[in-house]
Every structure is written in structure tokens, then in C-alpha cells.
Length: 231
Ligand code: CO
Image 1 (cartoon, rainbow, N blue to C red):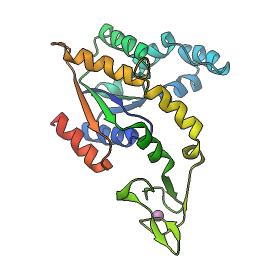
Image 2: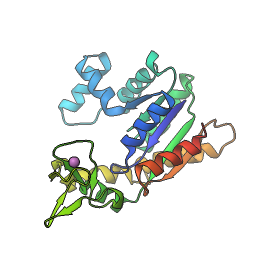
Image 3: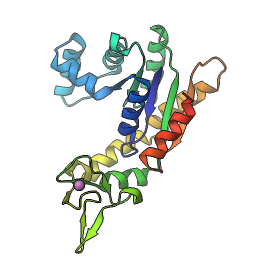
């Protein structure tokens, strides 16, 4: 089973990806990891990409697409893969689609976690980390995991311990920059999602687009996706 997973930063995409990986025993492939691995291993494509990155530029698609395709063709991906974080724009969507076809690789599902921009931003900025245990999720904007109150302070809802924020989660400029790319319906990631939605309408496209409401909790969203896949 081969899946493309879309969702804005803050939509819980990584968590859902991990659940799908486990459930279907497929590889969860994050585009950022492919990049880092190619660069650290000094592959031909990695060295080319590094020249751009060292200049503060993004690597062009004619380097990125073959890098991703190569990863998806590794033996560990033969039971299936779930690609997360790519394509980020409509050009990449068109090129990835063509490259998959050329390689004879079939797409089964395109999953989109739908969450509006303000809510996605709140969810990032509302994250609170439990100082004593990483596995105690707290978020001031998600009712199900709201921190507890003790003596006028917010404390971990699981253990009552101290909470902190991660600096990256409070970097509004960085969040807005990522979201500007994601929510761009003309050229950005939502345009890429739309490319696949339009394509899925054609008979014989061979894949299904699943739109998920990202507003409920992790558990509800994952139940919804498993129900849609129906396995
Ligand atoms: Co805790």
C-alpha cells in the first residue's frame, strides 16, 4: 500500500503517519530525513543538494525527485510506503506523479488532514511539554489534553509536574512561513493536494483521496482514516 500524506504543521500529521505505519506495516518516509541521509552519506545526489543548501537555497526538483524515488524503491519499502512532507508544491506534485508512473509505482491513497490555518497555528503554539515525561501530551488549545491547574499554575494533566514550551513552537515567523507554503492554493501544498483530487476524479486514476477532519483528537482522526481505508 502506497500513501501520500498531507496536512499542515500542527495538524498531527506525524502522529497519524506513525499510526498508519504500524497498522499497515509500511515505511513512514519523511522527506527531510531522506535529505539528511543523502547528505550525510555523501551520495551523488546528496552532494549536489548540499551545494544548494550551503548557499542557503532549496535543492531543485531534479535533485529532490530522484532522491525520493530512490528511497521509495529500497527493499524495505516493498510492502508499501507512506510519504510525508513531499510534494510541497504543485510543480513537485506533477513531477512526482510522472516519476512514479515512469517507475511503475502505484499510488493507492492520498490522505489530507484538513485543519484551518489559525487552528493549526494555535495547536503548535499551545503545545506544552511535561518536564518529567515526553509522553504526557498537554496543549492549552486542545480540550482533551488541556493542562491541569494547581495553585494558579498550569501543570501536566497526567502527572501534575512542571510544563515548559519548546522555543520552535513559539516562533510565529517560522510557523507563518511554513503555513504560507502549505495553505497556498495556487502553487503551494494545497494546490498539490488539489492536483491529486482532480486526478482522482478520472476513471482509472487507481487511487483514492481521503479528506480527514483534523479537529477531533488523535484517536478519532486515526479511527476515521482506518475506517476510510477499510482494512
Ligand atoms: Co507529566
